[in-house]
Image (cartoon, rainbow, N blue to C red):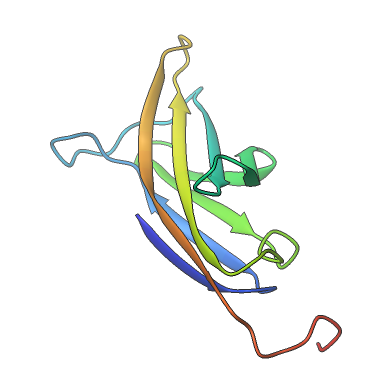
Length: 112
């Protein structure tokens, strides 16, 4: 997973969760956690089911993660991201891992 976003902007990240064979992972009863952190481990973004993560199609394993302009109001750089799925029985699985690049925005904080 590779994500790029300018500072202080919003992004709706749509993800299709699949197993190792490419089949969709059903999300009925599952919870999800998305975290972005610096290389040193300092967390900058945390989203969970119902709080920034919306399941858009349970049967097909489709979700949307809302990254807000407040979330992306951080220093430019490359951050590590992870998405974890906890199934209805409590087992935890990695559902995605990658990099988030926050690029410099030339638009100031107070500009709309």
